[in-house]
Image 1: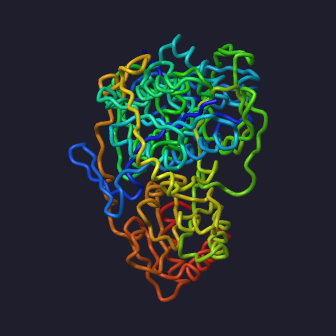
Image 2 (image 1 turned 180 degrees about the vertical axis):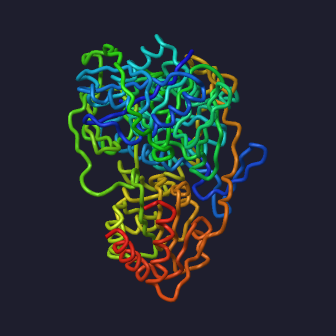
Image 3 (image 1 turned 45 degrees about the horizontal axis):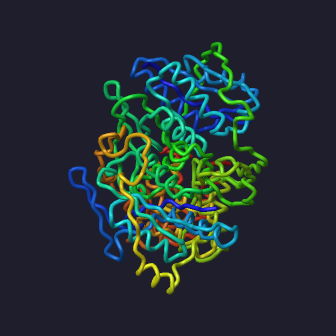
Length: 324
Length: 265
């Protein structure tokens, strides 16, 4: 068994952000193991994606270019990866922990009878074994896990790893046939609705969140204004969502989204443990709260004690000046 | 058409954890320490709705776990599931996701004539979300995860809306299927008073390894993954810096300066 494989998830000819992070992490793992890094590029019209994978640091690329692979269906891509893995016997298979990446790694591990570590936030290579850190118990505890034997399959949490950067590398991809024809794929994608407008909390590098302290739906106005100046996503605590002030898609926390932006600004959020579970891996946390005893200040690097309706507009103005 | 919903008993969302030598324990000073995994409630609700609105004959809750998981199954019965089965055997203990998938697939086959097997997005203890697709693989059924709406079901096929990272997609697949649900799917009901009374009197059958035809290995010894190293999140180093100043504007400006120094803008 040799070689590190990384799934290069792509859409409309572009490599997805989480796949760039996976390539970056996979490159590190391949270097530590002194093995080659192979990018797996599947889709329709993906020649340019294969070139981009070489440029981001892949030593080899195995590609398949076919209409059946266009929708990213696990029933099309799963059997292809399994067939290739049985032929080449890689040591490691990695992917970003997107919805598709999670499906695909679970499929691959099931069919290869392999161990699987999902949603990893840090990796360390110890001998020939990858030790992965992953949050458990809804982010309240951490676990360092490893796969005892056989191929190591893992998925990486979005924004936990630095994306691979251009290396100027190039190469010729090894193009292979699909494993299943359309007739053999039970599920059919009959409609797609791309997400419109606004930055989603899941992939934002900055999040401005409001909680109970915003007091009502209109209280999110200063939160949105600051988010707009920063190009940030708007987040919310469960209290604000349950009160009906903002839709569920904005909820950060144990029963909402788990996020790790570069900057998380929590306004009027006390910082219940369930909220912390969803945002504690943010790089820098800023807390704005009237109550200096609020638990959120224990987690934050910076805090302003004050009314969010005064502090947020002042921040919006200060950022506008700096950012021009 | 029978519908199965797989549920797990997990620590409550407000549970307080402690870890000693890799052994995790918890308690909930404010309530019950164990509950039905919150993500599974959406799957339970949808199973009941498939019975109420789409002609499913049975909505059967299955839980794999120790004997205390019968409590979680009673909650499912109180909500409106028609039957519950506890899949429990000391030999199952320590199974990884694939071992769990093999046991659950065997139980679903044992029920017979199941067209839809529902799961929650993930359990709030292991947080892996891997069992859905792996159970589908062991059954040879189509997995559809992140389902936010069932658009149509009948005539041997199902159409669902899936919430993907880049938007939504509508997918059609022949039955039987394994569905992974998300919160957008529905609003789970509370158990009714009558339901609770009925559930409290119910005897829940228990299936052990000997009752099932499990294809492949399960249990701790067969687990490919070692997850024994569990620990509390290290406390953040350093204290919060409270930004002071004569006016809000000055505080805001100071904070903005700090954030530029941190290079997070």
